[in-house]
Each structure stands twice: as C-alpha cells, then as structure tokens.
Image 1 (tube, helix red, strand yellow):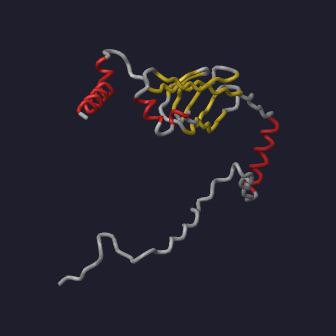
Image 2 (spheres, one colour):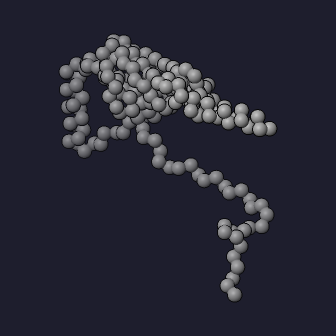
Image 3 (cartoon, helix red, strand yellow):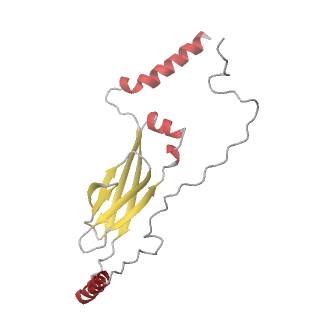
Length: 184
C-alpha cells in the first residue's frame, strides 16, 4: 500500500513539474494557423473586423467556430463569407484537455482557405444616369421606392419563438428556502 502511494506521488510530481525540470523544453499543445489565399493574390483580408494583411496571409487563432472573412481588392467585388472552422477530433472534450496540456510534442492544426475573386461590374454611364433620372422623377411625384423583396435582402424577423409550456408539477410544492412557517 505504501509503495503504491509513493509511485502515485512520483507520477504526480513528474507530471506537474516535469517540464520545469526539463529546463527550456517547451510543453506540447496545439498551434492553430489559418492561411487565406485568393486568386488573384494581393487582396486585403479582414477577419472578424480586424485587418490581417494581404493574400496570401497566415494568422494564428485560438478558438474554432464561424468567422466573418472579407477580401477587398481594387477592381474586384468585395467578398464577404461566413466560414465555419470545425475543430479536429482531439479538440473535443475530454481529448482537448489532454492534447492541450499533456502532449509531448506540438500538434499543428493548419487550415488553408482559397477564394476566387470576381471582377467588378462597371455600369455604363448612360444606364447609371437613366436610373438616377428615374429615381429623381419618382421622388418628385411622391412615389416611395419599394423595399427589396428578395429574402436575402430582407431583415430577420424580430419576434421571439413562443415559450415552451411548463411541465406538470410532480409531488408536493415546496418553495425555495423551505416551507413557510408563520411567526409565533
């Protein structure tokens, strides 16, 4: 029994302080890196409203999830994408604790996303003037410009879903803090 306790204590000490005893050796863990490439290259990359750089560009990240990625380049349509970045199997509980804290070497999770930019549509001047005159004439007549009817341009409804019904009570009701007792 004493011997088992000593062995467990030794394992705990080595586990907790093993990296300190190893000197400058760094513990493992997961290093996450996201690379954005575009065709043509040289587009400004903005991830979650933070400028990252010009393609091809790489950046590290901490959390998985959905990211808003924007690519901006003169002469091309601005591209905005909601990109889901799914975690690998070793980043789900309980494996994430082990891979982040007890990996003997560094684990690299490198993701690369490629985008194709579309050339900007240049509207001829006479068509643009025609649309402007049409809008000006309708405003002078008091006609209101109709709202967009396509589903992707309409705002999301603001109503909340109906509340779920409460389950039926089971057993006698006892308020929080115990039953009420009148003063004596």
